[in-house]
Length: 450
Image 1: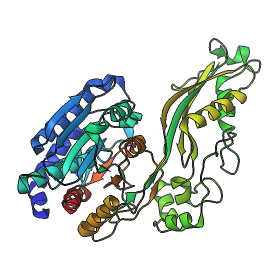
Image 2: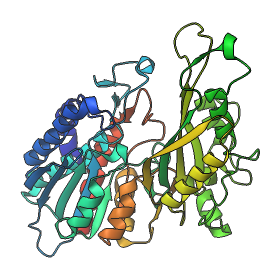
Image 3: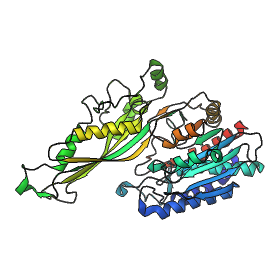
Image 4: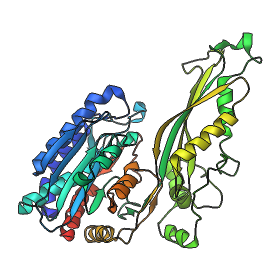
């Protein structure tokens, strides 16, 4: 299989570059036609592999792509999930090359979506293609469910799964949308934090006011917003919202020991990120803070004059974007209601506060000893010469919890990215070595399940 991958490597990369040229940004309405184009591209790519029953399924948002091949009698069925939508590319001026004009340099492919998730999804498409070419059939039954809304929390995939459990039924769900611990050290993530996102808006006067005429005598919306946002945290890094930590599991010594097995070089990370110090909840290591503890982050603020020079006004409106990562039994809706109450309770005199929710997703924990997960670790070891570790990830893939609960199937988070690949940031890229070895690993894994 390795020789076959090398033989087709250049053509595979050309196809991947074509895929990456599509600006399938699900969050931006102006890119709806591009997202539609992305769904059709995936459907065509699946047809080339020999998959059957291919459908581009319209939703009230962006399309889903389904395909299957179900002729491996008596063998397990694997549902492969991925997403063809990508994050916005802003800020564009920080990209060394245009985000949707993919280039290869230093054995990496640079483009928005390269590692999250087009490159990793494409690994599975090419693995299936090669397995079909090798024997004219697959060692297992395969279904694909590919969506175009992962970056906006999969609002239409959730009801689709709930309404089509028989169509999607599988012995395991395989997802490649996570990262190695570091180069050469593979990982199979066994927990993901939940997610919650919202925007708080502050309104004071009915218009911006002249700071010379009104300054010192009327409330300032930006000042009010900053006071409200600052009230969300205590000095020690803990979150000040009453009831926020309800449902957060106690950190046991056994869990700390498991997390401590994951290599971490905080000094090297600080140097890489250009930081002089780290910050977070006291009493926990960086890996614990970012893997098993909940967070509340301010993602952006706006208000007042943003142009060049100075405009001496008292702003009448300001807004802030907030996101949380949740763990254990924290319920996203309950946490949202607690934060909403806190924001209203902190409302300064002369200001009115409104809150709008955007995203919510439950945390998920997976059993690393499940045979489907252990066989994936075996496949990594065979190809990379190193057995995968089982880290707790700080990020969120909202649909993982839904797949595990509704389909009652183990989810195998078989990622091939690297933490350094700038996902969601300028100059996103994907290491070509992991692209080719990823194809080999997936082929090895599927053969091992037969």
